[in-house]
Image (cartoon, rainbow, N blue to C red; front, side, top):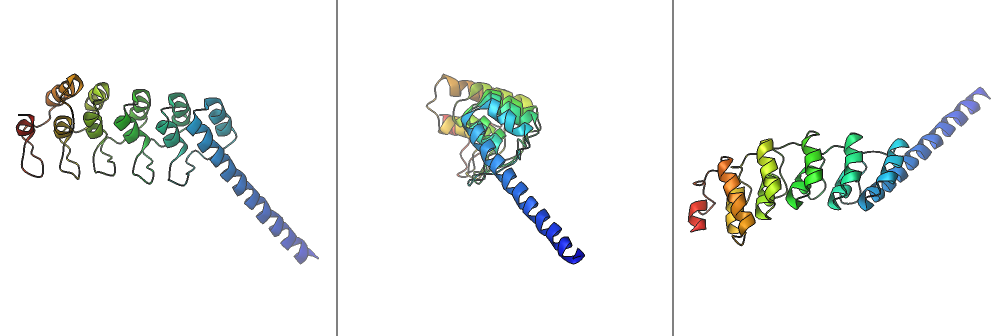
Length: 205
């Protein structure tokens, strides 16, 4: 009888563990959904209930990445304050830090910078957060990343720096002119060539 009772207890504990795991998975899915919608109140409620902070969706996104994709700064702040990893990457090799920089989401970017963003981390093109910010004309983001210490002379897998992208991939308008000035002031090498040996100065002519 003692032997039978022992196995009953083991079976009950196993079922309990399975139930706990399923509940955690469900809370994780709910947290991903709430974060993606920017439902900050629900995010906080789920975190208080023990939802897994680093849950992943089918694309490898964490709740923080989902919030960042929608530029939901308040939800992102709640997640970061709870300890979310600002450097966790999804299947596309984007992190909340890299994505916020590339998209020009300044409030979320600032949160990541003050909570351990890896300034040397790179996206799927081998570029830092600074390079796409230069290409897309995010002047204030470029300024902040340079202040934070991101290397202005980092070269991505395409052979381009932020300065090259600001010149080659832009329309030459005021925003990109301002970015070129910021980069040069921040130490960008105007003689650092692309893969074809052409320098930023040559491209600018």
